[in-house]
Image (cartoon, rainbow, N blue to C red; front, side, top):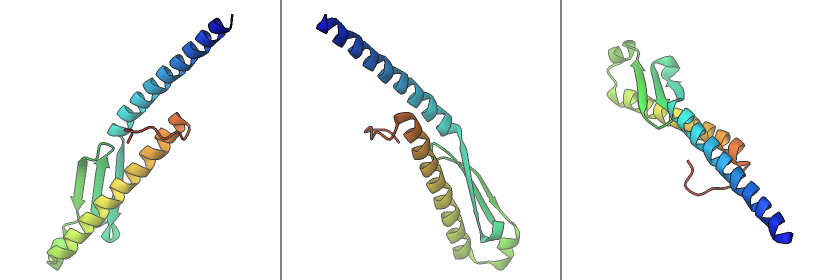
Length: 109
C-alpha cells in the first residue's frame, strides 16, 4: 500500500511540474511580445523595446537636430534604451516569479 501512495504523490508532482512548465512557456511567449517604453530629454527621444530585447520604435524630436549636439543625442538614446530594457527585465522577472513561486529555476530569463 505504501508504494501506491508514493506513486500517486509522484504523479501529482510530475503533473504540477508539467503545468508549471506550460505556464512558464506561455508567459515567456507573452512577455516576448510585450512592449516597454522610455523617454529622455523631456520627450525628445522615445524608445520602445519588445520583451525579447528588440527595439520596435525610436522617435527623435526634429527640434533636437537644431541644437547640433550629436553626442547629447547619442547619450539620450542610450539612456532611453537602457531604461526601457531595465523596465522590461524587471517586469519579466516579476511575472516569472508569480509562476514559479519564487523558486530559482536555472535557464529562465
